[in-house]
Length: 256
Image (cartoon, rainbow, N blue to C red; front, side):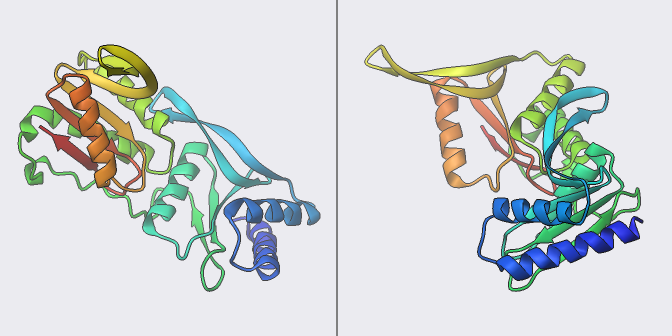
């Protein structure tokens, strides 16, 4: 598929790496590659925007690193090595943008590495629908069964790699469809001595006594969980559930 075009792109990728080496950030390689592709007479667009849909609902938009000839997505990395999550992210973009071919290129390793991904139903991805409620070892899991199923459906449908707000909007539509009562909180105030001394923007769902957070981060680490616990207390709620969609399988923490 697109053999001649892919051949030219590969040559451009290697020329950029041979010229710049492995010491720069992604933006530098993106600028250089755009210039090299255009010097070969190719249409190369950086940060090309496409609409993201969750079933029939538009949940946001996203930008590809480079789109070549309106056919091939090039996703650039400058990391020690490519991970399964990086691969799954590119597959998400191919499906979301409805493009037939993607190239994942990494300039940050010991040597230049790139992989080609055709957008096919048989395309292998590390993202797996392995969620089994019976195997969830979380105290009080029955209370959040529906939310776990919703989150897993969103992850499997959209895949990883998008911004927080895209998954939040998908969750919004799921809650509405399921007729689950909720409200949205977008701002929280800092009180000290019965005086408001500050505020900050937040993006939470409140379902009864449950605070629900939807994020897309590298890891649900101790700092994120600690801050989320403080939000629960600040809002006088009893429980909290946080989902991380930057993952290959359902990733969550239930605080009860």
